[in-house]
Length: 444
Image: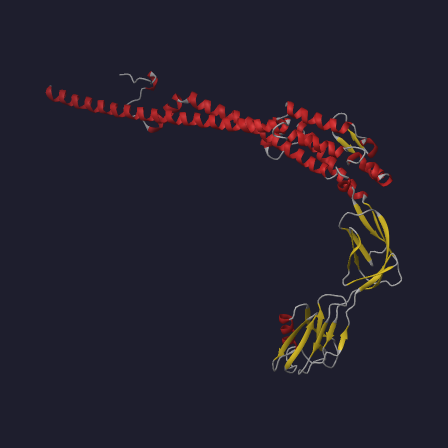
């Protein structure tokens, strides 16, 4: 007997084991299974290439962001504030501002208004009397009810829970007699932030008071005042902070170019450029093997990226500011000392190399536009390559899915046919045993 569709060596015995049947099916489906394996291998290669281009795209994005930070004078120019006496006065840039020098004098520091009650021997045992207390904070009046047997702690807690804009605290003066006193302070400094207390029917007497006062001083010889230590709007884009008063002492505040910070931005730009170049050349190992640049080394799109970046640099006088190209590797080399010297001697000249001015676009702007064009999914070489690889992966997934489905269907068919064959063989064997038994009986 021969089973159609099965090779002669695949004819099973009646008692074929499940494991033997599975091995037989695997052998019969080896060609189809190898097709699935081959398809998956091709997809892995495509994914590795896509991941390589995606990493390159990300590195270019970082380089573009670094260039964007410097492509306009407002972004390139980094300023700092230098005070002739930081203990008295400091400052920071908070908006658009021009470089220059300013002279100030801090005559008095701001102070909060305070009211201090008479002394008591303790803070939590001796009653302070009972009745009513009127606390005025700013323009608001608050009536505080003092219950019998309440202590300084109780009154301070009630004021803090009831009156906004003030803070009640217990002060230990260290005096031998009645050292504990209740102090009620305006939470905001300045002459306009006031606090007043009428003890009314209690035993508390707030006879000692400290008047609030504003910060006062002179700016370029002109009097000014503020209700706090922060000084805004004297100079547009500049916020000053007073640390202490120094009547009669002039403090000079200089707004100047920040050479260190600017050099740091240019150093970061060079580092990002070299990162792209090294990855594209395959000289940087990645943590994730699927991101390995070796998958895209030599690709025409990668070569175009390097050429485009190099072309964007060619018309810039980078050597004048300490940036040169390594002839062997193509990477940029930065002489920080020469860069800082150039910034110190001719800050605006260095800025014109990178930032766009009325004289024309700078290096940072040209490079940013170049990267944007390369990354464009519709027309860019890198963006188009990524789009194509993503579509190829989707097609490969569909192909693998079809091959796996066809393999599974073939396996099911073979398992069913072999199962039916086993059943038939078992039936024939049973009939043979029956006939043998009948013949043996007849011959006796």
